[in-house]
Every structure is written in C-alpha cells, then in structure tokens.
Length: 195
Image (cartoon, rainbow, N blue to C red; front, side, top):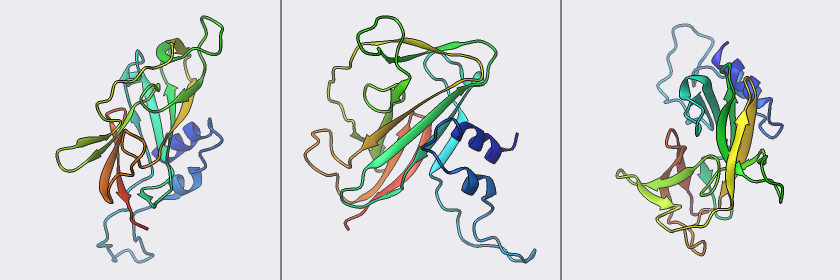
C-alpha cells in the first residue's frame, strides 16, 4: 500500500483528522510542469508523521502509528494539539496501558490521552542539547491505569494539548525554536512566535 494511502486509511479511523487528500496528493515541494526545472527550496516540515513504534506491549514490527499536529508555528494563545492513531497490523492482540473507565473494574477506556499520564507521551525540547521544557522533571500523580488490548487490524486513538506553558502552567515559554518529540520517536519542529 502506498504511504499516502496508508496514512489515509489510518486517518479514516478518527473523524477529526482530515488530512488525507493533501497527504495522498503531496508531491515534491515546488514541483513544476517542466521536467527540467528543479526546485531549490527545501520541503516544508510535515504536520503528519507515520511509522512503526513499540506501543507498550505491542511490538514495533506489528504496530504502526500516525501522529498529526494542528500547527507548527504557535502564536500567543494558540494551543498545540496532538492527535494519534495506533494500529495493530499483526495477527494477534497486544496490550497497552489506558486509564480505567469510570467506576467499573477491568475494561479500560479507549478515550486515550497524549501527555504526562497518557498512553502516548510527548515532550517539548529546546536547544541543541534537547533541554526538556515540558513536562519537565516535576513529580505527578496519575489516575489508575490498566491494560487493554488492540485486536488484529484494530486501532486506538487519542489526543493531547500543550498551551505553550512551562511546567508551572503560569508562564509562557520564551519565543524561539523548539522540538515536539512524541513517544521518543516522532519529531516536529515548532516555532513559538511573539505575535
């Protein structure tokens, strides 16, 4: 299956991700109708990345993820939204960690989160030394978590948000360039703008 088609198939599982047409039709940056013309412009950073990952007890060889962000440049007051879909392309079920659903014991919710206590972690880093700006080193208490399963050819999805704040949640990070790292694997360049 072509990469763009695979992204679209995964994105179809979540109605909030509507990037299929641009991803499937995307060609080289600056392409023209002339076969001899070549673009000197670098390709624009992508807002959607896909690949194989280890998702808790789901091995990377049979687990694919699609990560989508709403923007790469953030102006004051704009949140960064991170959506993810994880698909089990294997022939057996595999387990992942999720919060317990309500007061019932046993089954866990499929409404997953990205973030500090989420099924999918992410960090905001700055500088060439990848300094952890968010969530930082603070100790947090997470809700009760349990194992759930992704059946063969099934997906789970979730979302997370970052409001451009430091871990104290009272101060905006300084203007500049940052990197969003999702699950230690997917990297997106971010710009925090002053206006």
